[in-house]
Amino acid sequence: MTRQISRRSMVKAAGIGIGIGATATVTATALATPAGAAGAPLAHPGLLHTRADLDRMAAKVKAGARPYAAGFAKLTANRHAQSGWRPSPQAVVYRGSGTPENYRILYNDIHAAYQNALRYHVSGDQAHADTAVAILNAWSGKLTRLEGSADRFLAAGLYGYQFANAAELVREHGDFDLGRAQELMRSVFHPLSDDFLTRHNGAVVTNYWPNWDLTAIACVLATGIFCDERAVVERAVEYFRHGDGMGSVKHAIPVVHEGGLGEWVEAGRDQGHALLGVGLMGTVCEMAWNQGIDLYGYDDSRFLKGAQYVAKWSLGGDVPYTANTRRKGAIGGWSGSETASGVAGVDPSMTRPIWAMIANHYTKRRALPASYLTRAAAKAAPEGGGGDYGPTAGGSTSWASGRWRSPATGWRRRPAAPPRIRLRVRVRVRVRPGGARGAGGVRPQASASPVGRGDLAATGSGDVAGWAAAAGIGAVAGGLLLLRRRDRVLRRGADE
Image 1 (cartoon, rainbow, N blue to C red):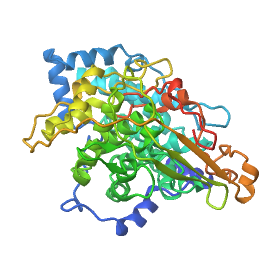
Image 2 (image 1 turned 30 degrees about the vertical axis):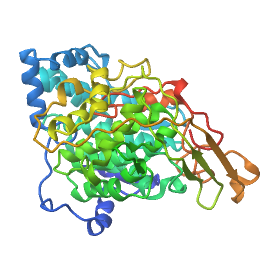
Image 3 (image 1 turned 90 degrees about the vertical axis):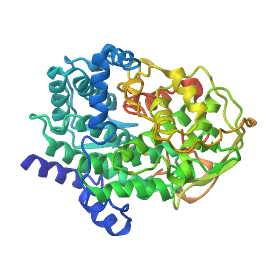
Image 4 (image 1 turned 60 degrees about the vertical axis):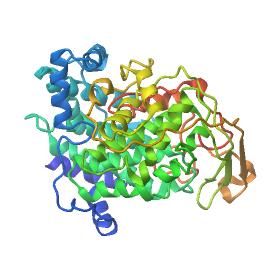
């Protein structure tokens, strides 16, 4: 108990942000609780895997059923999934700047914990559960804060929801320090993510692309579930539905075209980040679904339309795109705008482990047509994870080839979307002098520390490989999105 109180005091002293209790006080009266959910206990395990999921995986693998057996073989071959993994916990994790920039240690350890925990549930081998517990206990006993450039918000969002997912799988293990793990989520990961959704690092709300909001939403939602804080769950749900930032569903998918394709705004940026966003939104929807909250179906299944759009486009199909201009800059500082007038180019051979879970929900659970999702999922099967998609991949297996299988429920089918015309991309960036920091058209850079106030609109490092490696337990249940350097859109401005 003394150690937990000490950590909380240290974090608050460092100015990282308010804890989960304060957030709950603010949001409990402001956010509506879904009908029938008030006071109901949260389900455990209840993040990306439920008890039924885990039992089904174990039974199918034992029977040698396809595609479960192939997915499990991919898991067991991954270097992170070995019971001999030893953690290397750090007191301070830096991403984007700081010394040493050591975030790779964190995400590799988290994904080793996740993969070992998942392997235990499928095989019953206790050694893997013990390894997962040892990794998680080591980090909850040492990590006190996250620092760096604006990328610290990515670190909090990505590694926070990933840590919670790994911990959720061993929360009933006798040696797992559940209270200390919950305290780590409350005091280190959650405050930065919640603060980003509130203040967006001091930038105008549209400065950051959807992925930034989506990592924060995923962390806040995972924290609420893992820590049994329903008001915090509702904070994430409310933001997904009605948030001002680009990661809320109506901003990430601003236009629904005739025929049912929902334009993914980040398709005007590049293929890799659009895929990452779809995977992250799928992660949020699945975690909410496992608590009885249907974000998949929100606003007439808007996410289905956006996922279909990205799947078709990534497969090489023509899609429409409405020119999108967003404001950029720091509040009270430099300002400018950026316009994307068409979809970016695609590499149809780019395969990412993000499709099986989403396709399963809409085609199996809901019996809706989703031909592009189905094709993309088939192309990616069997889906893997960290180590399967490149040398910097730090995530763990998505298990999507063996996990996301549910019976159809007889929902009414809808017409498939017809093909559309692809537009060429043209991006214009204009930066207007404004404020002491942006005068003279000087390009703002990422701030060097969490308390820096010089260039708060900076959106992180330009190292796409670093983003890819950090994606962690992929965008869905562990699959990593490896964003290739050649897919990077070089920007003359403050965002990557």
